[in-house]
Length: 263
Length: 268
Image (cartoon, rainbow over all chains, first blue to last red; front, side):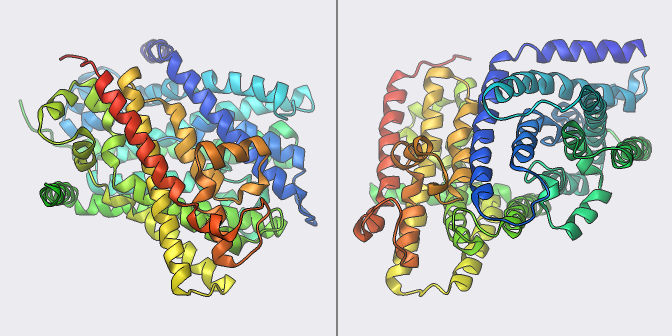
């Protein structure tokens, strides 16, 4: 366990070096957030009948999404992808560590630091000037944080799964092209999920991707409560376990058939 | 000289396309991925329209026209001058020095670096939306309207290309690419998919005068639809407005040339 913690903290310290990139990222996300806010302002001006979210809730949802965009916008671990391509992944195998846990720790730290560095400034600006509402109660804030940690774990598990699939080059790459499109549509980053037609929502609800954004955001606003909140958390944790187990199994299979050339 | 350059560009194109076709399956997945992302994006917008019915009095079909023009134009600009997009790597590695030594203009050589065919995914999607929207709107496809549509798309491609050139030119001063410029390219696409009258006036001014995205879809689309226009432009202005994109590209190339003169190598 200590080895994984050391990997976690050293990766975090490396990433903290890229402060300029973080500032540029924050400014970009603020810009996109303002554009989206104006688009939804315009939508809410039209005399619509029954919209399942109030204007304020939608704006809050948008800003939570902009702040935590790194939970829904990701691809494979580029360094590991290169190792798999070049064959130096063999060195990873010689380490006296569990390979899945090693890669998971890398993915988790690679997500966590940039996520916090982006989220905190965006939340502060949006809270002060741009219409992000604070959570209605302390309980909402706590349950939001719990779900956000779950979302982070799920995102890391998906990253490792996508990376492991690269051991099967072509089909792995194909999946890596298509999954981000699905995440974009089904997580809530494109459009707040409650605004989708009901039949589509029930299909999306089964998939794992809403647990990345939609679940924490609705818990934050109190848009989900009681039994619905509990079942959303159960959904999230079920998928974390499924994706981790799938990643482990596929990695084990991939390593059994792995042939590395060279000497 | 002119014919010679064209010949050379076709050689560049041939090399670039052949190298991309080495990995056919991979190429197919990438193109499909682009199609899927943009297709789902439009589907998401359609879902919101279903909830609200309209945006500032505009229907989904009308928005489809704005969306289609901008999407096709952006796809062209992402594919053709792709070399400018990967330019920061050239600067960082000091590879730009080699380009300076060759007897052709720098901009021409960067243009020839890569033609990214997989953008056909977004191109196709934009075209599908455009055709769907014009069917639903029962646009009268007179030859004049087709000419204006093509002019608008080319003007848009020039405008986005100009933005990519500017982004590359900034590297002469900063050596690294600035993510913030994406606000004007990807952000511009996202913003200009909707009629600009939905935005606040300061924002509208930016996308009309500074980065004239409105001139390549909002104004010409009014002429094509035969609608009166809210901001008080005349039909004539709507017809010539895509020229702003072409002018923008030329201005960007001027900045680029200043950058080239300012260039100092990173060494190797």
